[in-house]
Image 1 (tube, helix red, strand yellow):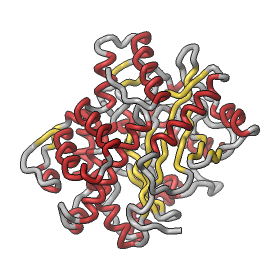
Image 2 (cartoon, rainbow, N blue to C red):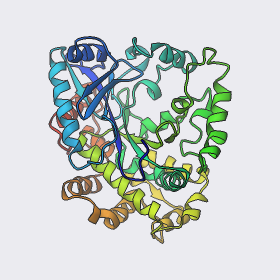
Image 3 (cartoon, rainbow, N blue to C red):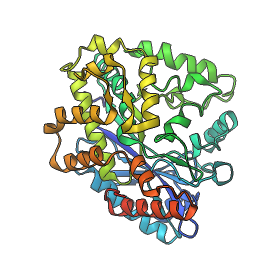
Amino acid sequence: MSYHLFEVYGIELEYMLVRNADHKVTPIVDELMIAKNGSLTSDIDNGKIEWSNELVGHVVELKTNGPTSDLENLDELFANNIKEINEILSHLNSKLWPSASHPLMNPDTDMQLWQHNYSEIYALYNRIFDCKGHGWSNLQSMHINLPFYDDAEFERLHAAIRILLPIIPALSSSSPIFEGKFTGFKDARMEVYKYNQKEIPEMTGKVIPEGLFTKKEYFEGIFEPINKAIKPYDTEKILDHHFLNSRGAIARFDRNAIEIRVIDIQECPKADIAIAVLIIETLKVLVSEELVALEDQKAWHENDLYKIFNEVIKEAEDAQIENKLYLNLFDIKEETSANKLWIKIYNRVKDNISPKHRETIEFILKRKSLSTRILSAVGTDFSEENIIKVYEKLGNCLAENKLFLP
């Protein structure tokens, strides 16, 4: 079934499993699935939420079980599933941790691929790309799936999403630390994401997707180059171009949706869903052409948007947006920070957001991104002991669906 713009949504949240004893990642998602299901499976239907495995054995994905129109109570649904998973994991001496990166993980020694269903696909990925790096094995995100009905709706939605992608990490960055050190990027997940498929650059492109606005253009401009580039590696023809496309937003013509992938996972579903709501309400304004005409949105080249994106993944909300043409899209006349830009956007759309989500968004805009709050909590003490202390508090935030305040 095809849906119209903003009629329904699909949300996916990824979490890492860590051992209680030493706080290292633990590849026991298969044991979690067996404990819940009674036998090994890669997907569990748990009512309105589905549990799934991922590429690596220590990451579990929770997602809406089919499209939903209810974003108001979605965080509570996710939170209830997190409680259930943590209860099961307590018998396996482990628990869920939030944020987009484990701050102490060594991918060379700690990564284990999922060994069961789809293992031949994951093994092929590993053979081509060597999936041990942080860009494969240490990045948890939220994906937002937004439907389009036909080419006309795809054009409007894709144009709007391309415009918004560069500044989303100003809200969502949560991956400042790799292997016990500040990476220099508040969104280190997206920094490594840019290069983790460097062997076949056609797959990720410039993260910001090219200006292609029909199904035909998209197949010719993105899918066909990907298929051609992967062909020498995929001798058994087991890879699907929809999954090979790794841009920051990908068109899924198999289900008529665009999936946004540049959003780091937060400390709890309350924060994730509030960020999703703000992104969606902003996209509605862009799609409506209230701010800027469709043709002007379409005119933006990915290289210009990519420059803004690179500043934002480094500095998050503190990034200075200097491109005046970009700021003009949001009716801003002079250089400003990404945080002030989001405050301006929020003030425009907040009347369409419920008080519950408004409170969370205002907390994030005032207290800054989770990365900034994590770095504030760690301070100058990057000892393993102190980092674990901070991330244990994040784990408690996840368990209780509450926001993190250093």
